Each structure stands twice: as C-alpha cells, then as structure tokens.
Length: 477
Image (cartoon, rainbow, N blue to C red; front, side, top):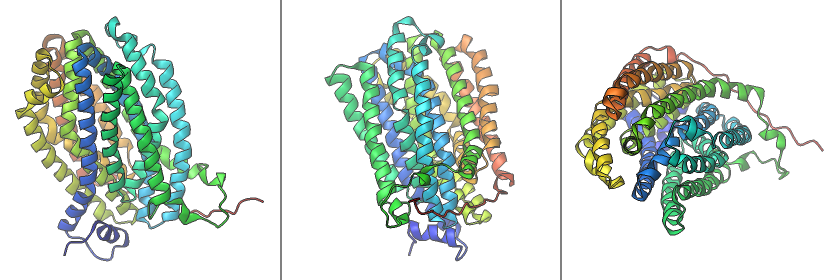
C-alpha cells in the first residue's frame, strides 16, 4: 500500500528507514502536482488577461508589455525576501522544531510588511518616468505609467501573500497555497472582465482587477497559515494570557542574518536578471508595437511550458530544505536529481506541444495576424531550450532549499548578462525579434548545462544549520 504524503515526509524528518527511489519520486510528485496546477492556473490567468487586452488593441497590449519586465523585477525582489524566511521554516520543520518555525513566520510577516512598503514607495517614484526611460512611443506613456502605479501599490499585498504561501509550502502544506492561488486566478479573470469591459477602465482595470484578487487571496492565505494550519497556527504557542506580544514579531539578529544570507543573493540575481530583461525590452521597444505585443504574448504562452518546472522547483526547495533540517544529506542530493529529471521530462514534452500548436495558441490571445505570425516564429525557436531551461529552474530550487544561493545566483546573472544580452544586441538589428529569441534559446541551453554541472558537484550540499531554539518570555507586567 502506497504511503501518504505526510507519512513520506515523516520518513524524511525522522529517518526511520531508507526511502526507495519510487517513494522519493512519489513524494516529489505529490508535492509538485498542486504547485504545478497553481502555476499553470497563474499562467492561464496571464494569458486570459493578455487576451482581454489584446482584443482592446495592439496599443493596449504594448502598454502593459512595456512595463512587464520592471514588474517582474519588483516581484522577484518580493520572492527573494520571502524565500529568506520560508527556507528557514523548512529547516526548522525538518528538525521538528515547529515552535521555531512559527517564530520565523511572525518575524517574517513584520519584516516583509516593512520591506514591501519601501518597495511600493520606490515604485510610485519611478512610475511617471519609466516609459520614457525605456524609449517607448509617446502614445503609450500615460497608460504604462498608470498601470505601473497601481502595481506598485500592490507590493505589500504581494509580499505578504508570497511569504505566507512560501512558509506553508516549506512546511509541507502544498495543497492550501496551491488551491488559493488557483482561486486567485479565477478571481482575477472575473475582476478584470468587470473592470476592463463592464466599467470601461482599459489597462487600468486589468491592474485593479489583479490588485483586488491578490488582496483577497492574501487575507485567506494568512488566515489558513496562522489560524488553521495544524503545524503553523499561532494558537499552538498560546500562553493563556490571550495578549498580543509585540516582542514575538520583532525580527532577531540571527533570523535577519540568515534571511539576508539566503535572500540577498536571490535579490541581487533577480534584480540583475530583470535589469537584463529591461535592457532587452529597450532593444525590442524601437522595433515597434507589433514586436512588443508579439514578445509579450509569446512570453505568456511560453510560461505554460516552464510553469510546471517552477512547481517542481518548489517541491525541490521543500524536500531539500527539510532533508537538511533532518541532517540527511543523502536525501538532499537524491531528491534534487529526481526533481530535475522529472522537470526536464515534463518541460520537454510541453516544448514540443508549444512548437506544434504555436499559431493556435497565439490566435487565442490576439486577432492581429502580424502579431500571431511573429509570435509563432519565436515560440518555435524557444521550444528547443525547454528541457535545459527545466534543469536550471529545478536545480536552482534545490540550491535554495540548501540555503546556498550565492553561486547559482551568480550563474544566472552571468549567463543572462554575458550571453543573452550580448547576442541580442548583435542579432536584433538584422533579425529583429527573432534574433532576440535566438539569443534567449542559446543562453537557456548553456544555463541548463552549467546548473547540471553545479548539481553534480557536491559542494552545494555540504552545508549544516544551527537551529535557533525559541523560548517565549512572559509579558512584562
């Protein structure tokens, strides 16, 4: 009889016996499936959003596409900050120190709110100037600035949602955050239709619809984490006084130091990589609205291929992190390789399907024949890179779980800045958007190779952790 997810996780934490490779694969699949569903739902939401904007016109699609890479930058910084705390939760859960895990969550919520408010202020300052700096046509400046302003206001909501979802996943609860994020996609489509078409708000309506969907999901995510989750709910630390103790939420020096060690390289990498994407957007922008729209829509469709990889990557982070907390380095390496092989297989098949049905997929988003033709061509170029892209995505998730994020972050940065950006600059003048995507394909294949080489070396798994045991002091009378 097959063991349940919780029973398999108990084998990891307690080490009662060695796990077979079938049990390891089953656990990776059980953890990956809900995350993959949520990731694919998220991409479906983006595609539906793009389709709604695409039917408004190419200009509206270009408006959103212009600032999308900068939005990825801000979202990447939020993801990195959340990872600094959620990975620590995985380590504490693996060591069966659940009180320590809950303490990390309290500190993360406080620190995350402060960080995201600063990020929102920076976004509001940048919003009026960003379209001008990116060299876009003056006709889309106002719409792009308005869209980015609304997204900047959503940063606190986004950060708290990511933090809560990450902590739940790293504790082994993949189902709740996956279902809530899938539900968020449905809400987003409903709100976007209401605001874009019924209220006639255009691109601003798309931004407000996303904001509201994120806000509702964030409230539910935190509710399930702090009140309902059987391992993480704060009531398990109740001392009978029913008082809200501020000192429990103040980040300690050790927690912040660990969060910085884990999250800072990710933040730097996300910042540098999104900076490269922004630079590439600057290369594409002079090619005209058709190229901008085709690039934006093609990226949305390609996301269908690599989102399963990110779902498996989340499972790899959880399993490597908990294995490290349980001091089982053999499991760390084994889980990492099984997850990478699974990701490469799935994304290879997805890439093949994308190449075959590229025109049909593009036609679902936009009726513009020129955009469909150009988008289909670049998608078929990118399909070749999907298996190696999977290797880099999933291996990176394993490295994050181990807490050793500096080297893989530098690998990502070097690959995109040295290889992709250089090739894009060389190929875009003569080949247009196709040249930019050829550069992307070559770079992703190279990136996958160097990540596999890093995974083969054992340096990434030669780590240990020092748990910070937590004792709650009684309130001062």
